[in-house]
Image (tube, rainbow, N blue to C red; front, side, top):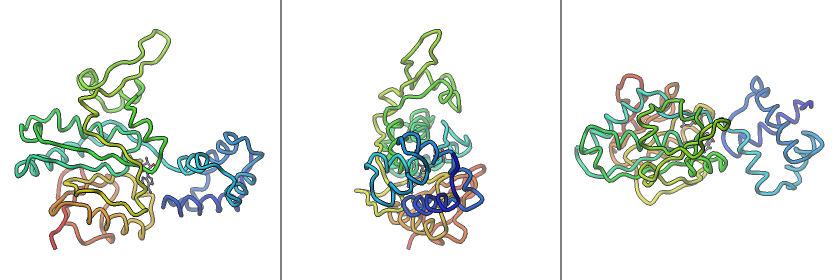
Length: 278
Ligand SMILES: C[S@@+](CC[C@H](N)C(=O)[O-])C[C@H]1O[C@@H](n2cnc3c(N)ncnc32)[C@H](O)[C@@H]1O
């Protein structure tokens, strides 16, 4: 099935306006299989009919969500970039040396592995103040599809094997299926999920939280955004951080040219910033 350049341009513009995710012309090829799949899923004659359906507002709200979902890259894994979780533990240690509570936000949580890894980092801590802290984790994403999976906390053997040690697997996950022919599925135990709250949030829209966060993880999501959107999102995160709160970015991300309201905290293997006080 062929997708014309005009059609690709139309969908790239639509995706950017709704999610901020930039597909520039050299990356249009990444959109082609997604558009073809959507066309087939919606039983349409081709990409042009999909485009017309969007223009003439003929898609159901579910189909529109599906379209936006299809544009997202949801790559993630348990303890993705292990050093980052060591750095986060250091940050947790610093914060809990002064108070008993920890409020954390995983701002683009994808299928949830990042938020469950945060909970395991706390629960497995050898530092009593971290381990006993009264913590809450907000985990959000724009994609309803990944949030549904994250909330369920169900993972295939393959997903579990990507980053999770077997001792943590048996301590925090229970096996749902066990058959010779079927691959196993694992479910997060209550002890792991009980302090995690999943919520749909588009980082580009106005959002407010009832209280401020000590740590915000915004990893591997801003790389897909233009500079203006990066500034907007970082400013709002700044507004929602406690004084001296911490921001953790992905390994390839930085605040250079984006914000001067944070100081860089040198930590090996992680991109960590601390909010500057006014
Ligand atoms: C590559 S994943 C990163 C997951 C996790 N933070 C990690 O580093 O492993 C990027 C996630 O950002 C989400 N995303 C993209 N644009 C977004 C937006 N405007 N608001 C909220 N989430 C968004 C995608 O749905 C996707 O799940």
